[in-house]
Image 1 (tube, rainbow, N blue to C red):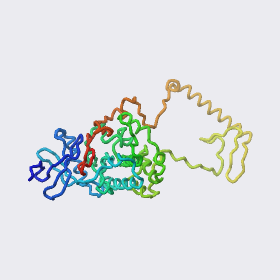
Image 2 (image 1 turned 90 degrees about the vertical axis):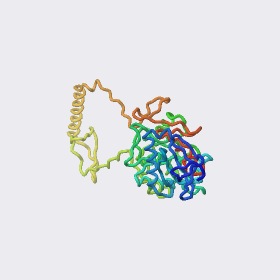
Image 3 (image 1 turned 60 degrees about the vertical axis):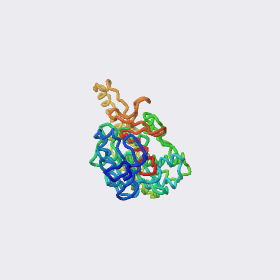
Image 4 (image 1 turned 45 degrees about the vertical axis):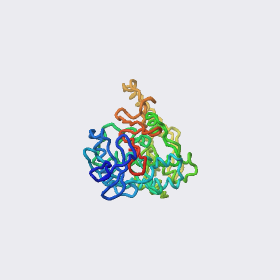
Length: 410
C-alpha cells in the first residue's frame, strides 16, 4: 500500500477534484478493480446533522438505482470510521457549464445535449426520482465531447423520501420554475423547465435570468420571462426554438408532460411539440341554433322592443304590437324587482368588491425576497464570483467527482 489515505482499505484518495458546501470530491483509485474512480466525501462538520447525512445517503441510493448511459454511475457507498462516502464513475471531461462559459453553442450541438439530458431524466422519472437541481454544472461531458451525463442526485426526491423542511426550497434558483419559487412541491414539470433554461443558456451564451441578487432573480423568474429564443437567435430552427420556449412556459400545464414527449418534439415530432398543453382559457360554448323561436317572456330570455328574430329556414319576422307591449312590460317588472332587491340588501351599501387576481403577485419590495412568508429559501453563498446562489441544498460544489477536474457544483 502506498501510504495514501484509503477508505475501507480499498479506495485510495488522491487530489481534490472539487469542493462545495456539502461535500468534497477526491480523485481516487479502486485497488481491487484497478480503475480510476471519483470519491465524494461528506464534510466532517456536517456528519452531525442528521438531515444532511440522510440526504447524502439518499444521493447514493437514488443514483445507484438508475442505470443509463446518460447518468453518472455509482459504484459503491459506505461509511469509513464515521465518514460517509460515495464512489462514482470518473469522467475525464468537463461540465456543460465550462463549455457554455466559452460562448454560445451551435444549435445542432444544443439539440444533442438536450436529447441526452432528457433521456437521462426519462429513466429517472420512470423510476420515481425527481432530480430537482438540473443545471449546466451538473451535466458532465465525455472526453470526446459527444455524450452528456447527468450527475448529482444529492437533492433528488423519491416517492418514499422527504427530508426537505416545511417551507424550505432546495435547488439552484436560476434554474427553478416559477411555481417552485412560490413554494409549490417539485414535479416532473420543474425538471423539464430547467432543461429548457439550460437550452436557452447554451444557445445564447448567457443565462435566461442573469440577475445576481436573489430577490430580483426570484422576481424576474416569477414576472419577467426572457425574450423568445427566435428573438435572440434568429438562426435557430423553429422546432428547437419552440421546444425550449414551451419548456420554459410559466404555466406548468403548458409545458411538456414527460421527458419522452419533450425529447420526441426535439427530434421533430410535431404532434409531440403541440400536443398535451392544457389551455387555461375556458372553452367557448358552441353556438346553439333553435328550431323555433322562444316565446316572448320565456325564462332566461330578453327581447327588446322593436327587436327581430330569425327562424331557421324561414324569414325574419317582426313582433306584433301586443308582443312588443308584453316585452316592454316584462322589462319594466324585472327592473323594478332589481331596484327593490338592491334597496333592501344592506351589503349593497356597505361592501366594496375587491378585484380578484388570478396571478401570483410578488408583493414584497425589491429588497425583500418574493417567495410567500410560508416559504423560507435557504440560500448558500456563491461558489465563486458569477456563480448562482443555491437554495436549501447547501451543495455549492465545485467538482462532482466525475471527471478529471470535472468542475461540478454539489
